[in-house]
Image (cartoon, rainbow, N blue to C red; front, top):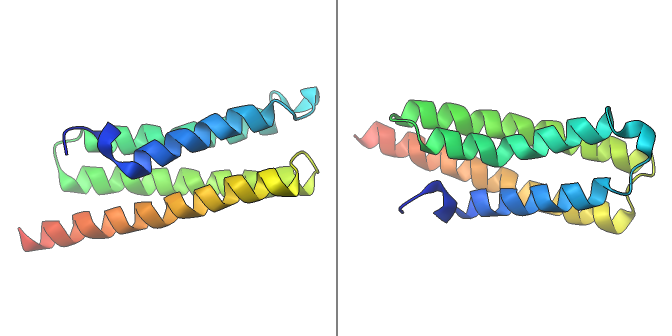
Length: 122
């Protein structure tokens, strides 16, 4: 692997960000500085922390940034649920975003486990 851009989890996280930006265009204008801002920031934080952690010189730092990405993803999932319950998202759009976020969640968890296990072996 040459760069963080080769990580499927990073690629899927970028896809999630793109979908979020498109979906929030349909939110009410009064949410611009509230829920729209929050959900975009939490979504953008996921691939950003994956990339930053990848660039660190230690596996411990990498795991820490992947954990931060996971936390941002949980924050995103919460905001997604709120958006859906406020009827800002259709069932279809909610399902699409939620399923992708769960896939990313599992991938992050697996990546963290692999890095930790490799660290123990070395």
